[in-house]
Image (cartoon, rainbow, N blue to C red):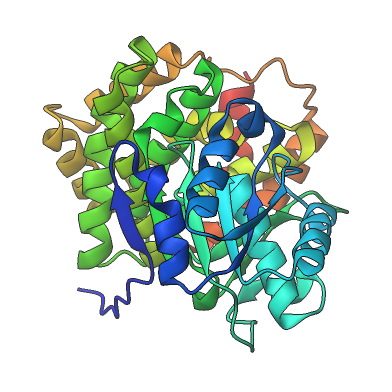
Length: 378
């Protein structure tokens, strides 16, 4: 068994309507001036107003930055940083999906430690203390609320830079399923598939431990059973809550075990074609699972996961995943993409350079990545 040192940094608060306690938690962290980092869609949906009201009720000054964009880059972080500096804040609140939390974390690195965001690529590059962060996810997907990493796109290559430091982790994560009820079906599907793939990948990585497996397995059970219910009935609050928990547990697993080759191969597709991350990992995970079964340990874990939800084989598991992808509107093929054989080789080279691939249970060569891409591009 792999040794581990588990130091939970994030307080998890789960429950319908728990957003109303945001001001209470901010006060507990001695906050007086807060930057709420969110996007325009959540402002229109009224979620930002709920957060502002909860903070102001406790006498906390609030400034809103609603310029969050999907897959934030260095310019997005700099824009958020400028507002944070002007407002002289002492706490960040990230309200939204992974992009909102990544933007808040990125701005936090620069506000407290100076420099530019690429200075923090890697782990443990922040030498000074960082401001507290409260994370309020409105999607059940990235699990960023339970991670110490900010994923920021490089403005030149559009590849994601992972900037990680224990000080960047949220002090509190508020999981309120009511905030996910307004999500469009497409966003629900893509973020939900992302959470499911997180569970599948973290369960078999080389870095997995007895502790991380507890979170991976429960995240898988929750996501596999709740996602079809949410897609069928978007107003199913219980299923929405299970998805939020599943995503948070999967995020906790990532923090302790990292990811694998589905994410390594998805990132170049997002960078080059703007493909939504959840759709990219969803379409690639079946091929990665098939290759990973060459590892007896990984095959045994996949079978255990399958049996935990009443399936009797890895093939049955793959069939269930295919069924969920179909209900999510994700076809098995990416043949519509303008990908030449030369570009497949470039994608494979880029995938092999992604750091998550190093944790996969089976080593992938550039040729293995080429074969994986060819499978989904037919």
